[in-house]
Amino acid sequence: MSSLLAPDLSAGLWSDFLKLAGDDFDMPVIASGTIYRGPSAIDGAPIVVVAIVRSANSKTGQMVQTYILLDDMDPQTASKTGADVSICGGCVHKGEYDENGMLIPGSRTCYVTLWQGPRVVWEAYQAGKYQDLSTDPDAIASLGFGRLVRLGTYGDPAAVPIHVWHNLLAHSIGHTGYTHQWRSKRLAGAFKGLVMASCDTPEDRIKARREGWGTFTVVPQSFAINGQTFHMGTAPMLCPASKEAGKLTTCADCRKCDGSAKADVFIPAHGATGGKYTGRRALPVMG
Image (cartoon, rainbow, N blue to C red):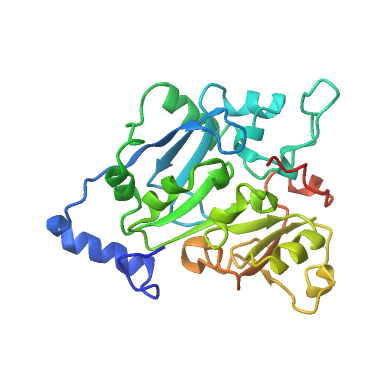
């Protein structure tokens, strides 16, 4: 994806430049908006994508955040009933389900706290607080203009038609993104080179790398933090924004997780439920 800016210019310098440039750029000032409303590319259920320019996330740094949500169901209910498959696909961190299709309490290991960002954004969307930009490619592009973008703050980017992300990234200075749909013959092709393959076992990582993906592997917290964990000759890089690495940087400054096939990163399971993750394999792929 092309950008307006040489890739070695820092986000901070670009931000300062935009402030000085002021009105010289004919781009509308939009702080947030709904950039997609339509069927999930995973299973056809109605979903929405909300993009928000400002971020208080200390790990990622200042990036445009994008929330992929069910249009007609709040995130907590979607998680409890398994309906979040429409936005998360076959992600192992969704949790485990009983014979009635209900989430087994305590089995979810996703680092995203549903009642915080996702629930707040979903309720604001339901209340009509976000401008609908979904049919205006230029307005969508303005949200990413001169900014770093996080594809899938919550939800899998591959649930969304690829042209939506192309519009958002058209004039951005960089992005990060991850998908569990790298195994899907139907969905993977458009996203290879754009986002990282989300891997949950050493075997996942080996397979994804052989298929030409950049990889981001989540490992149980009990794993030793060294290359031997992966039983391969080349050790992946511990995410430098992680607690285990000493929070050496932020995602906004690192930017390795942009889909490059050279990127090979891992992180111990994190968030409030990270300690529960034991290295399960991913759920069956849809498509």
